[in-house]
Amino acid sequence: MVLRRLQHRAIPTLLLFALAFEAAPVQAAPSPRGLDQRDIIRLLEERWRRAYDSIEERKSVSLDNAIKTGLLNNPVLAKAYAELQSTQWQVIAVRREWFPSLSGSNPANLPWALSAETQSGNTSDTRSPLSTTQQTGFNTSPRVRLQWSFLDPSRTPRLKSNLALSQSQQLLFDVSARDLVLDIQMAYFSLQEARELRELYTLIYVLTQQQTEKVKRLKQAGVATKGDLDQLRSQLLQQLTQLIHIFEQEMIAANQLAYTLSLEPGALLVPSERLYPVPEWTIPLQATIDEALALREEIRSSLARADSSAWMSRARLNRYLPSASILGQSQVTTRANGTGTLRSGDYSWNELNSGFLSNAVGLGFYWLMFDGGIAAADSSNAAYAAASNRAQADTWRYLVTLQVENSHATYIANRMVIDTSLAQLKSARQTVDFTIRNYDGSTIDATTFIQNIQNYLNAARTYKASVKAYNIAIMSLYRYSAQWPMASRANLNERLPALKRQ
Image (cartoon, rainbow, N blue to C red; front, side, top):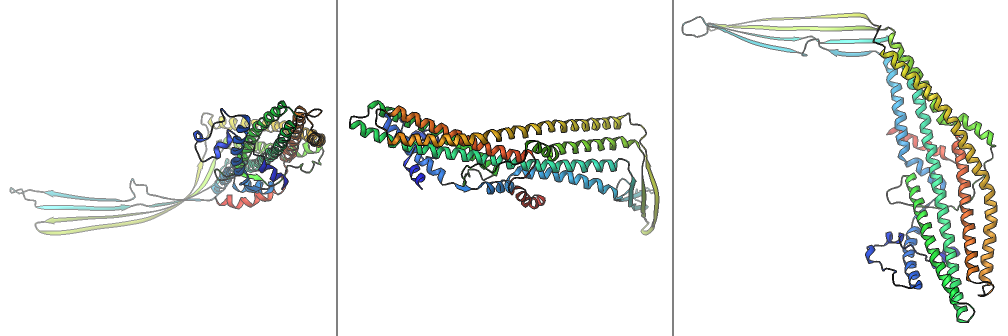
């Protein structure tokens, strides 16, 4: 509550960023040109008040809920899962090749044929027809064909190739989820850092304002000088500039968090938790590396793709082996023909109908003995793809080791820096408090106060940066050793049913 009151009293300004929150156009804002330092400060403080209020109206979210929201909403997972389902349906398609196929056709050009013909003859002098003949016909010949390919040397290798590819895609789906969790954590920690730095700078701005008022009274009493007062006012403007950059960092971090959580356009969230060090990493470095090499999905995915390409190479080479199938066919042929004759007023009609059914069962055989080496070339292509994926797996092993080692080094270093920077921060704050209490304009003047303030702000930046780097390093160790932090695995499982229904 004390900090809240200080923040409302401290209204440091954003000349550039606050304009985005004003309803009036930019041209309507009063220009600070021609104003003295006090008027400029008041003008910018008013703009800051509106910008600050817009930030405080945002809803808050915890890190756990942020991870849950991102895993439930981010379309990256939907894309990765759709690609996984695509490979799974490829497996199903190959498996269904074991089933017999049923087809229907008609060997004629048309499924039915209807013909009509009229013939006329005239042998009289009056050119009147003595007879007229009309012929009509209707023919059908539908055929049903049942085929079962019981021998296909390329089918089993193709099935195993698609199974390996589906396994690879499953692993890549987990990679997408792990990357998303780490991105959310990094955005959340960055937003925490920027927000708390803004609070610290706001508090320092309040103290500088109070010190400025104190120096004004000392100047009236003949103790302080105008130079001291001008230094403090310049310091206020400098702190406003620093707050502008911190505000920019906070907004960018909030935008990044909204992006990773897939919030509605324009929606932003603020962290509900303070930036504190997360629990330490207790697994030794070598054990962490060994676990990462054994579990990292990128390595296993590359090996699965190598396996898929190797099976595809065999499938393409097996095209040269003979294949066989059982065929069954049933065909019905019908004919309906009629002839009508009109002669001297008498009409006669003759009709002939016929139909027969034929059934046949046989064995189909196909053997590609030579195709110019096309299938062999395709097989070699897939074999080299398998070798490439195995080399990629080796590359991933080195990269995984590097990622774990670098994250562990960052973790160890910042674990020590946190302790030293926290001690420095406490000492610097005590120095600032001492300076404020004992400011007399002579032994402790504006220069001393400003130096102590800057030392405190530098210590605060170092401490917040070290805590953020420490937290990110630990979360990176979770990511790079293929472990699920907090309840992220359970949150991912909640979304799977929705992804399956898409």
